[in-house]
Length: 122
Image (cartoon, rainbow, N blue to C red; front, side, top):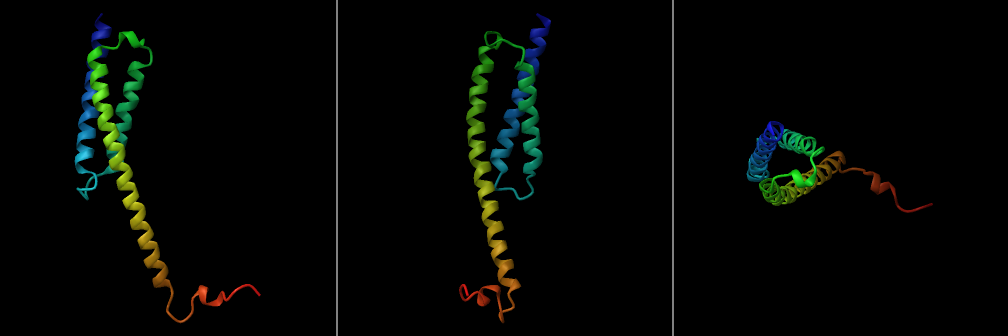
């Protein structure tokens, strides 16, 4: 019985930590330039790993209904987080493409470019 109570406390702590990480990331991503997405992602991954380890030997019937409800709630936050991370990554890709285009234009000195020598196939 003590082991189950200890596991419940650990699960509740991990779920609480995961929820705080998601709330922080969802609030700051794309808004706070000093936000460390890589570190936040590492923390998120650690929580998900801990949850997997805590649940790996537990039969589904042994999981408290309150955890199931909390997990569903966190799942909605994860879905929001996924959308925000995807939007952030797409914005990063767009910036990279713009920078590549600018760098390519800067490489050409205006006299000759590789495209000017390609008149067609001979």
